[in-house]
Figure (cartoon, rainbow, N blue to C red):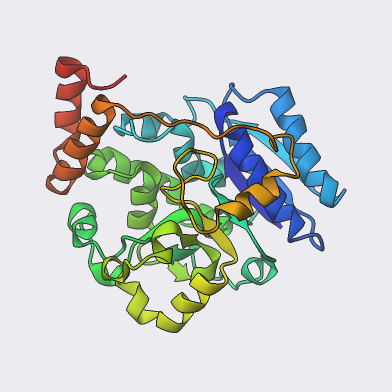
Length: 319
């Protein structure tokens, strides 16, 4: 089973805990992990992740792929101040990974795997680019107005993706990602997720919601997720017994997190070198929240790129 993660040195701990959970619940399969990273990633970081992988199965492996700014220069035009550049590495998997790797599961670092992924891995992906779960806000009309495609095609969360790299290469999706970025950067709010959704809007495949249970799914937010009504029974099952818990917007390693499954994160962390790590205090000041609000409010109008530039230069709101 091929797994891809994207991280820098600062995100090694969450990714390590995620890999611990993955390996603990998938001992009967060899996990080949590809880590897309930058030059902040150290030899010790690699050793720590390798130790986690091989502790459960000696056939597990880690391949580290260093990504340069030159390789991803197309995405540098996106005003992605809300997210680290590593989130966009996944757009270039078809060229960054070895050509003989034709299918992968992409996993964000802010999630844990509670059960086997064998059924997910064995999903037939012929003629599909990506297997995904709807985003918790996929019923938000402004997403579709901003990206210029109909709501009937849906909008997915890119934190977990079953990816058909053969399809990506055959249909040159990387080129299409870059083309969309160049032509539509003012409409892009979520750097990688918006691009993936637009380009694969007609080639994606729905996989069970239990494989990406986002924080918002655990609360009464059905009015924001139109797909709930389409998959009501599946949705309720996923909430009761998720396979993958995605700590979207509520990270257990940060103070103030009240996620109902946060103790499961600490259960897996207890088997790692970070067992006694104190919770991280997150402080986002007025500058961050001011620009966050402005960008959110203006994104549907396609002018955030220009407004952000103005604030960056004139008001110095960006740290």
